[in-house]
Figure 1: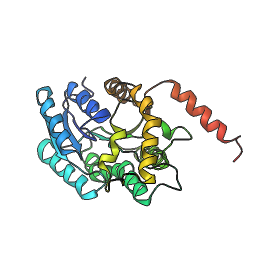
Figure 2: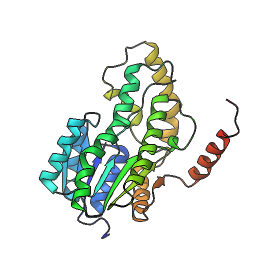
Figure 3: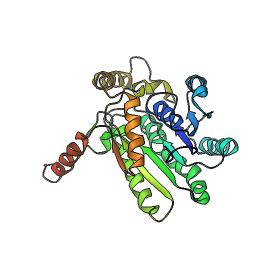
Length: 270
Protein backbone atom coordinates (compact mmCIF):
# COMPACT_ATOMS: atom_id res chain seq x y z
CA UNK A 1 0.00 0.00 0.00
CA UNK A 2 2.93 2.38 0.74
CA UNK A 3 3.67 2.43 -3.00
CA UNK A 4 0.50 4.50 -3.49
CA UNK A 5 -0.48 5.88 -0.07
CA UNK A 6 -0.37 9.66 0.29
CA UNK A 7 0.45 10.22 -3.39
CA UNK A 8 -1.49 12.46 -5.81
CA UNK A 9 -3.04 11.01 -8.97
CA UNK A 10 -4.63 12.80 -11.93
CA UNK A 11 -6.98 10.72 -14.09
CA UNK A 12 -8.41 12.02 -17.37
CA UNK A 13 -11.59 10.54 -18.75
CA UNK A 14 -12.55 9.69 -15.19
CA UNK A 15 -16.31 10.28 -15.28
CA UNK A 16 -16.96 6.72 -16.47
CA UNK A 17 -15.42 3.46 -17.63
CA UNK A 18 -11.76 2.66 -17.07
CA UNK A 19 -10.99 6.18 -15.83
CA UNK A 20 -13.66 6.03 -13.14
CA UNK A 21 -12.41 2.63 -11.97
CA UNK A 22 -8.79 3.78 -11.94
CA UNK A 23 -9.75 6.79 -9.83
CA UNK A 24 -11.56 4.58 -7.33
CA UNK A 25 -8.64 2.16 -7.22
CA UNK A 26 -6.33 5.09 -6.44
CA UNK A 27 -8.60 6.36 -3.66
CA UNK A 28 -8.85 2.86 -2.18
CA UNK A 29 -5.05 2.85 -1.88
CA UNK A 30 -4.94 6.11 0.06
CA UNK A 31 -4.18 8.47 -2.80
CA UNK A 32 -5.55 11.96 -3.40
CA UNK A 33 -7.29 11.96 -6.75
CA UNK A 34 -8.09 14.62 -9.34
CA UNK A 35 -10.90 13.68 -11.70
CA UNK A 36 -10.82 15.25 -15.16
CA UNK A 37 -13.43 14.83 -17.86
CA UNK A 38 -15.24 16.83 -20.55
CA UNK A 39 -18.66 15.64 -19.37
CA UNK A 40 -19.44 18.12 -16.57
CA UNK A 41 -22.64 16.39 -15.47
CA UNK A 42 -21.15 12.92 -15.14
CA UNK A 43 -18.00 14.37 -13.59
CA UNK A 44 -20.05 16.05 -10.85
CA UNK A 45 -21.83 12.74 -10.27
CA UNK A 46 -18.52 10.89 -10.00
CA UNK A 47 -17.10 13.38 -7.51
CA UNK A 48 -20.22 13.32 -5.35
CA UNK A 49 -20.09 9.53 -5.15
CA UNK A 50 -16.38 9.48 -4.30
CA UNK A 51 -16.24 12.10 -1.56
CA UNK A 52 -16.74 9.46 1.11
CA UNK A 53 -13.89 7.36 -0.28
CA UNK A 54 -11.08 9.89 0.14
CA UNK A 55 -9.75 13.29 -0.92
CA UNK A 56 -10.99 14.11 -4.40
CA UNK A 57 -11.16 17.12 -6.72
CA UNK A 58 -12.95 17.33 -10.07
CA UNK A 59 -11.96 19.68 -12.91
CA UNK A 60 -13.93 19.87 -16.17
CA UNK A 61 -11.25 19.37 -18.81
CA UNK A 62 -11.01 19.20 -22.58
CA UNK A 63 -7.90 17.11 -23.07
CA UNK A 64 -7.77 18.12 -26.75
CA UNK A 65 -7.06 21.73 -25.72
CA UNK A 66 -3.63 22.49 -24.31
CA UNK A 67 -4.84 25.45 -22.25
CA UNK A 68 -7.45 23.24 -20.60
CA UNK A 69 -4.77 20.73 -19.56
CA UNK A 70 -2.61 23.56 -18.22
CA UNK A 71 -5.62 24.73 -16.18
CA UNK A 72 -6.01 21.19 -14.86
CA UNK A 73 -2.36 21.17 -13.76
CA UNK A 74 -2.75 24.55 -12.09
CA UNK A 75 -5.87 23.51 -10.15
CA UNK A 76 -4.23 20.25 -9.12
CA UNK A 77 -1.16 22.04 -7.79
CA UNK A 78 -3.30 24.57 -5.94
CA UNK A 79 -5.28 21.87 -4.14
CA UNK A 80 -2.87 18.98 -3.66
CA UNK A 81 0.64 20.11 -4.61
CA UNK A 82 2.96 17.70 -6.42
CA UNK A 83 1.60 15.05 -8.77
CA UNK A 84 2.98 11.50 -8.64
CA UNK A 85 0.68 9.54 -10.98
CA UNK A 86 -0.62 10.91 -14.27
CA UNK A 87 -3.18 8.70 -16.00
CA UNK A 88 -3.67 9.96 -19.57
CA UNK A 89 -6.78 7.89 -20.07
CA UNK A 90 -9.41 9.94 -21.95
CA UNK A 91 -10.36 8.52 -25.34
CA UNK A 92 -13.01 8.45 -28.06
CA UNK A 93 -13.70 6.45 -31.18
CA UNK A 94 -15.22 7.48 -34.46
CA UNK A 95 -14.99 7.27 -38.21
CA UNK A 96 -14.38 4.13 -40.21
CA UNK A 97 -12.24 3.32 -43.20
CA UNK A 98 -9.25 5.57 -43.86
CA UNK A 99 -10.51 6.95 -47.17
CA UNK A 100 -14.11 7.78 -46.32
CA UNK A 101 -13.69 9.03 -42.75
CA UNK A 102 -14.15 12.80 -42.73
CA UNK A 103 -11.29 15.14 -41.94
CA UNK A 104 -13.28 16.34 -38.94
CA UNK A 105 -13.42 12.82 -37.48
CA UNK A 106 -9.72 12.27 -38.09
CA UNK A 107 -8.91 15.53 -36.33
CA UNK A 108 -11.32 14.90 -33.47
CA UNK A 109 -10.14 11.37 -32.65
CA UNK A 110 -6.46 12.28 -32.91
CA UNK A 111 -6.95 15.47 -30.88
CA UNK A 112 -8.42 13.52 -27.96
CA UNK A 113 -6.60 10.18 -28.13
CA UNK A 114 -3.13 11.41 -29.11
CA UNK A 115 -2.89 15.14 -28.43
CA UNK A 116 -4.71 14.64 -25.13
CA UNK A 117 -1.77 12.46 -24.05
CA UNK A 118 0.79 14.90 -25.47
CA UNK A 119 -0.81 17.86 -23.67
CA UNK A 120 -0.99 15.86 -20.45
CA UNK A 121 2.72 15.14 -20.64
CA UNK A 122 3.53 18.78 -21.41
CA UNK A 123 1.34 20.09 -18.58
CA UNK A 124 2.44 17.71 -15.82
CA UNK A 125 5.79 16.07 -16.57
CA UNK A 126 8.04 19.12 -15.98
CA UNK A 127 6.63 19.46 -12.47
CA UNK A 128 6.96 15.73 -11.82
CA UNK A 129 10.62 15.86 -12.83
CA UNK A 130 11.22 19.01 -10.79
CA UNK A 131 9.96 17.65 -7.47
CA UNK A 132 12.17 14.58 -7.88
CA UNK A 133 9.95 12.04 -6.09
CA UNK A 134 9.12 8.79 -7.91
CA UNK A 135 6.49 9.49 -10.56
CA UNK A 136 4.49 7.49 -13.10
CA UNK A 137 3.04 8.52 -16.45
CA UNK A 138 0.39 5.98 -17.43
CA UNK A 139 -0.96 6.29 -20.98
CA UNK A 140 -4.02 4.37 -22.10
CA UNK A 141 -3.57 2.92 -25.58
CA UNK A 142 -5.49 -0.22 -26.54
CA UNK A 143 -5.00 -3.84 -27.52
CA UNK A 144 -5.39 -2.62 -31.11
CA UNK A 145 -1.99 -0.91 -30.71
CA UNK A 146 -0.52 -4.42 -30.60
CA UNK A 147 -2.64 -5.83 -33.43
CA UNK A 148 -3.02 -5.14 -37.14
CA UNK A 149 -6.62 -4.07 -37.71
CA UNK A 150 -9.67 -2.26 -36.31
CA UNK A 151 -12.93 -1.06 -37.95
CA UNK A 152 -12.06 2.58 -37.11
CA UNK A 153 -8.91 3.77 -38.87
CA UNK A 154 -8.56 6.96 -36.76
CA UNK A 155 -8.88 4.98 -33.52
CA UNK A 156 -6.40 2.35 -34.70
CA UNK A 157 -3.86 4.97 -35.78
CA UNK A 158 -4.24 7.00 -32.59
CA UNK A 159 -3.64 4.02 -30.32
CA UNK A 160 -0.54 2.90 -32.23
CA UNK A 161 0.69 6.48 -31.83
CA UNK A 162 0.08 6.44 -28.06
CA UNK A 163 2.12 3.24 -27.77
CA UNK A 164 4.95 4.76 -29.83
CA UNK A 165 4.84 7.96 -27.76
CA UNK A 166 4.98 5.91 -24.55
CA UNK A 167 7.99 3.96 -25.84
CA UNK A 168 9.76 7.18 -26.77
CA UNK A 169 8.95 8.78 -23.42
CA UNK A 170 10.13 5.71 -21.53
CA UNK A 171 13.49 5.83 -23.30
CA UNK A 172 13.82 9.58 -22.66
CA UNK A 173 13.12 9.20 -18.94
CA UNK A 174 15.41 6.23 -18.25
CA UNK A 175 17.76 8.21 -15.97
CA UNK A 176 15.02 10.12 -14.13
CA UNK A 177 12.65 9.45 -11.25
CA UNK A 178 9.65 9.10 -13.59
CA UNK A 179 8.53 5.75 -15.01
CA UNK A 180 6.18 5.14 -17.93
CA UNK A 181 3.52 2.48 -18.45
CA UNK A 182 1.20 1.93 -21.40
CA UNK A 183 -2.18 0.30 -20.90
CA UNK A 184 -3.39 -1.96 -23.70
CA UNK A 185 -6.85 -3.19 -22.71
CA UNK A 186 -8.89 -5.38 -25.02
CA UNK A 187 -12.67 -5.42 -24.59
CA UNK A 188 -13.66 -3.61 -21.40
CA UNK A 189 -17.22 -2.61 -20.56
CA UNK A 190 -17.06 1.16 -21.08
CA UNK A 191 -19.14 3.91 -22.73
CA UNK A 192 -16.70 4.50 -25.57
CA UNK A 193 -19.30 3.65 -28.23
CA UNK A 194 -21.22 6.70 -27.01
CA UNK A 195 -18.32 8.86 -28.18
CA UNK A 196 -20.44 10.50 -30.87
CA UNK A 197 -22.11 12.54 -28.10
CA UNK A 198 -18.79 14.40 -27.71
CA UNK A 199 -18.21 14.89 -31.43
CA UNK A 200 -17.63 18.59 -32.29
CA UNK A 201 -20.44 18.51 -34.88
CA UNK A 202 -23.27 15.93 -34.78
CA UNK A 203 -23.40 13.51 -37.67
CA UNK A 204 -26.32 14.49 -39.95
CA UNK A 205 -29.22 11.99 -39.66
CA UNK A 206 -29.41 9.76 -42.70
CA UNK A 207 -25.93 10.72 -43.89
CA UNK A 208 -23.42 8.15 -45.13
CA UNK A 209 -21.22 8.99 -42.13
CA UNK A 210 -24.09 8.31 -39.70
CA UNK A 211 -24.81 4.97 -41.36
CA UNK A 212 -21.14 3.99 -41.16
CA UNK A 213 -21.05 4.94 -37.45
CA UNK A 214 -24.13 2.83 -36.72
CA UNK A 215 -22.50 -0.09 -38.51
CA UNK A 216 -19.35 0.40 -36.43
CA UNK A 217 -21.43 0.35 -33.23
CA UNK A 218 -23.18 -2.85 -34.33
CA UNK A 219 -19.83 -4.49 -35.01
CA UNK A 220 -18.33 -3.50 -31.65
CA UNK A 221 -21.23 -3.42 -29.16
CA UNK A 222 -21.42 -7.17 -28.56
CA UNK A 223 -17.68 -7.33 -27.99
CA UNK A 224 -17.80 -4.41 -25.54
CA UNK A 225 -20.81 -5.84 -23.68
CA UNK A 226 -18.99 -9.14 -23.21
CA UNK A 227 -15.78 -7.45 -22.09
CA UNK A 228 -13.96 -7.23 -18.81
CA UNK A 229 -15.41 -5.27 -15.91
CA UNK A 230 -13.49 -1.96 -15.59
CA UNK A 231 -12.89 -2.60 -11.88
CA UNK A 232 -11.15 -5.87 -12.72
CA UNK A 233 -8.91 -4.13 -15.24
CA UNK A 234 -8.04 -1.33 -12.83
CA UNK A 235 -6.79 -3.91 -10.33
CA UNK A 236 -4.63 -5.44 -13.08
CA UNK A 237 -3.25 -1.94 -13.73
CA UNK A 238 -2.41 -1.27 -10.09
CA UNK A 239 -0.60 -4.59 -9.80
CA UNK A 240 1.26 -3.89 -13.05
CA UNK A 241 2.40 -0.50 -11.79
CA UNK A 242 3.78 -2.00 -8.60
CA UNK A 243 5.66 -4.53 -10.74
CA UNK A 244 7.01 -1.67 -12.91
CA UNK A 245 5.58 -3.16 -16.09
CA UNK A 246 5.75 -1.02 -19.21
CA UNK A 247 2.99 -2.83 -21.11
CA UNK A 248 -0.08 -3.66 -19.04
CA UNK A 249 -2.67 -5.78 -20.85
CA UNK A 250 -6.12 -6.91 -19.82
CA UNK A 251 -5.71 -10.54 -20.89
CA UNK A 252 -2.54 -12.71 -20.95
CA UNK A 253 -3.37 -14.13 -24.40
CA UNK A 254 -2.87 -10.68 -25.93
CA UNK A 255 0.88 -11.27 -25.75
CA UNK A 256 0.58 -14.31 -27.99
CA UNK A 257 -1.87 -12.58 -30.34
CA UNK A 258 0.44 -9.58 -30.67
CA UNK A 259 3.46 -11.77 -31.38
CA UNK A 260 1.55 -13.65 -34.07
CA UNK A 261 0.20 -10.44 -35.60
CA UNK A 262 3.61 -8.79 -35.92
CA UNK A 263 5.33 -11.98 -37.10
CA UNK A 264 2.74 -12.39 -39.83
CA UNK A 265 3.46 -8.88 -41.16
CA UNK A 266 6.92 -10.07 -42.26
CA UNK A 267 5.49 -12.88 -44.40
CA UNK A 268 2.11 -11.58 -45.65
CA UNK A 269 1.75 -10.26 -49.16
CA UNK A 270 0.63 -6.65 -49.54
